[in-house]
Image (cartoon, rainbow, N blue to C red; front, side):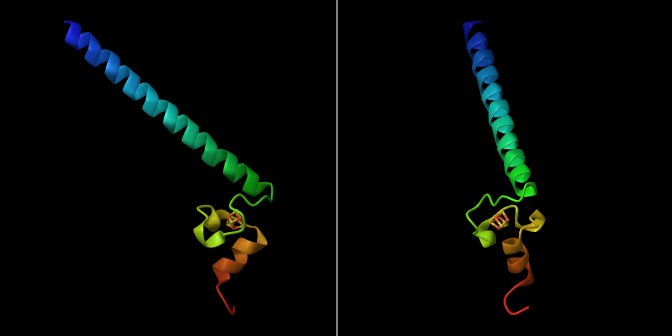
Length: 70
Ligand code: SF4
């Protein structure tokens, strides 16, 4: 009986931690996207490693999507 309570408590904590991580991660991504929409670079201008490159309309990102010499 005590073992079941411990398992239930551990499972509850585990899922609560996972949920918290998902919320924090999702809000961080949403915040980065919002800044890009406002015209602010969020990755120090290193577009080739930026996860928002495909949806970014800033000039630097557009240049890297076009590639060199185009
Ligand atoms: S794609 Fe380039 S310009 Fe756009 S946010 Fe990322 S690093 Fe900045």
